[in-house]
Structures are given as C-alpha cells and as structure tokens.
Length: 274
Ligand SMILES: *[C@@H]1O[C@H](CO)[C@@H](O)[C@H](O)[C@H]1NC(C)=O
Ligand SMILES: *[C@@H]1O[C@H](CO)[C@@H](O)[C@H](O)[C@H]1NC(C)=O
Image (cartoon, rainbow, N blue to C red; front, side, top):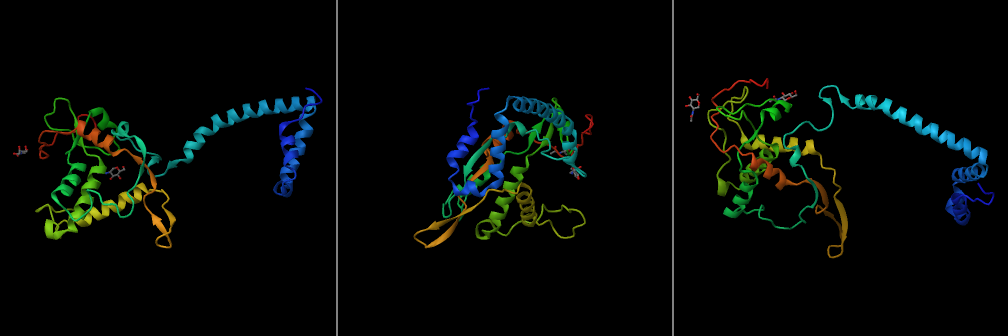
C-alpha cells in the first residue's frame, strides 16, 4: 500500500470539516481520525483484515445458531408459531397498491340504493361456497365437512372476505328500511346457543365487521393537507394502501364454485381424519 494512500472518508471529512454540524459531532471526528491512522499502516491493515474475516465467520455461526432461538421467541403460547395460518387461497393473493376514494366521490356502492347499486353489491360476493381438495382440507387449521356423494372427495369452505362483504351489505340494507323493509331476524326457527331471542343478523354483522377491522388493523397513515379554499388543513382518506387484489381472490372462488345443491343434512363423516 502506497504511503500516498489517502482513505476516501477522511478526505471527504476534511472538505466537510468547515461544516458546523460535523464539528459538533465529536464522536464522529474521533472515529474518522482513528480510521485514518489504522489504514495508513500495512501491519494494522492486515490485522484489521483478519479481524474482519473472523467477524464474518463469527457472524455466520452466530446467525445459524440463533435461528432456532429466533423462531422460538416468535412462538405464541396459545396459537403456536405466529404468522399467517394456512389458507387454500394463498396462491390467489396478489399485493397491489390502491388509492381509496376521495371524500365526496360517489360510486355505484353509495346510496340512495337503486337496482344498479343492489346488483353491484351482490356481484361482490354472490358465488356460493367453494370446494377444496381433501389434501387442502387436511391442512386447514379448522376442520370442514366433505361434500356428500362427491366422487372427487372434495370439501366445502367459503372465504371470509365474502362473508364480510355480505355483512356490510346487510348493514347497508338496514339503513334503508323504506326500500328493504325492517332488517330480518332469523333464520326463523333457528336457536343459536342459549339465545331465547331470535338471531339478530344485523347485530351479528356489525360485530363480525368489528372483529375483522381490528384483526386486519390497517396501518396506512391518513394525512392532513392544507385546503386553500376552506382555509383549513383537511383530512384525506384517499391515501395509497397496500391491498390484496380482490378480483384475483374472487376469481379463485369462482373457479372453485360448488355449483350443485349441497344437502347439509347429510353427514359424511371424516375418512380423511379431518
Ligand atoms: C378453530 O380453531 C381454533 C384454534 O384451535 C379454535 O379455538 C376454534 O374453536 C376452532 N373453531 C372451529 C369452528 O372449529
Ligand atoms: C337432505 O338429506 C336429508 C337426510 O338424508 C333428507 O331427509 C332430505 O330429504 C334431503 N333433502 C333434499 C332436498 O334432498
């Protein structure tokens, strides 16, 4: 190594040393002058290189050893390993960025309701149940029933997103009794748990939506921006979100639509241990 060698960092430091900000950072200057001292001497540079190699080796062993510890610390005492549970629709998940509607935008989903808004809402989730294979069913964290008399031995599920949107639609309809009548109780004759009251569908839907909003806990920051005409900083909900592509998930469900009547009164049993 030549005696004329000038490390880049101290040079950069020298030209920036007039900067008041840098002068204040005593710690940084110490580091910089020490590194200039070290790198000028071949012997010390050699030691540094050896130490660097040892460091990398140490880091490797440390890393490979700490991996099991690391996953152990992510173990949840009740649910086991944390992170997403298995879903047969995992392959349909496409992440995308989506800008939400600006305040005041009217979409086909807004009221007052018409036949067109009703159809738009129904189209979001009217696809019935989906089938999955026995292999997929065996991986589910919660068991589900096989379809009776099904040659392929398939099982029935429905993705929660469609139940959620059904519920939101149910709540929406409850807001317009003049069009939809009073919200139905029921289904009639079905007693749920120890309830003596008829099942309140709307109330159930509000709760399931609450659970889902909290479960997914969207951390997209909404922002406030100065509004010249109003003379105030105004909140914006038309921020850009990380989303799952809904159409891809709906396509997945459509492709696996159970398009025959499922008689839920027939019990098949669980040959597959599920
Ligand atoms: C689903 O699995 C969880 C965890 O084991 C359990 O607490 C819950 O009761 C199950 N639900 C059904 C319907 O099997
Ligand atoms: C469904 O299955 C039950 C039990 O086997 C039977 O009594 C009933 O008639 C079936 N319903 C229809 C619509 O096939």
